[in-house]
Length: 325
Image 1 (cartoon, helix red, strand yellow):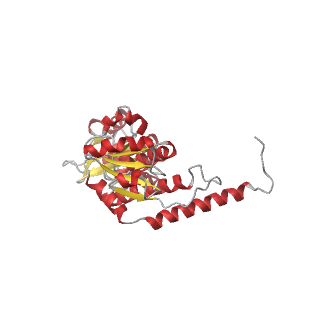
Image 2 (spheres, helix red, strand yellow):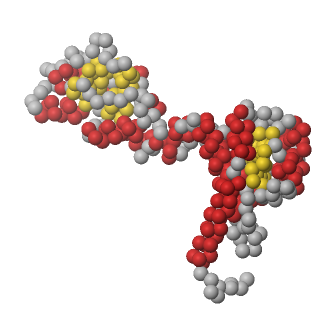
Image 3 (cartoon, helix red, strand yellow):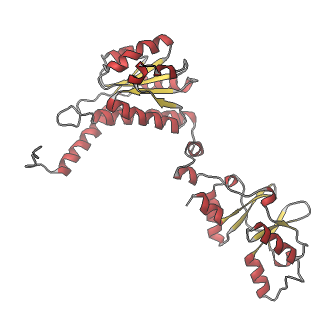
């Protein structure tokens, strides 16, 4: 194919496309009305899932919308209308809401499944750019794109329409997110392997508990405490009183400083070398916050305390392995 580049600058073309797609989103913004409220409340009140469906580019955008809905607290999945015609309609339950996407509103594969879905009693939300289309008329709620033309100079390739549809899907997902009171912690639960999920990881998810905890008493002979520290492998031991309350911590660093001052491991007790009133955290704070405490006070071990009693222990190595940094 011969390139016709005379008097054409790529960056100018790119800026023109972005401006036209910006205009498209503004048009969709101006068309947003009470139907959007109805769509949000319909989804909020359903006991089922949101089934997103669409062909071609609308289908690709629909897959992203379904993924965004699911990750922000609205269970959703994508159903290909052509597959639905040949048996996959069976995945739809009676409580599901259908989100059907078609720029023209006349996509044959979509129109073929709508009568069956309506007969089952499922509600249909349609996103189209044609108020008078068959799909818009057959739907229970219609969300109008209001796009004048595509950014494609031929006005053929889905550009402005797909961008506006994607933005409208985001608006729907975020409105549902806010109406549900969805939090960052909720988001992390749906993204345990993602970087955000890791940053929102809490101390109780990585702390050592139970028999893994190195624990000693202040009047325990120091040499015995050293054995406990070596056995547990944290380079530290928590020091508790007779009621089990945390009163101190002893670390490898404490031992080195104690010996440097002339102390004897064989003739001393834990209380002689420990650090009283140590820094500690609670189990429900973020791991990243525990790391900040470690960095601020130049320590590598933190007790986890509840009601003055140690319930866990985290080491800097645990944080590094968790992937929060």
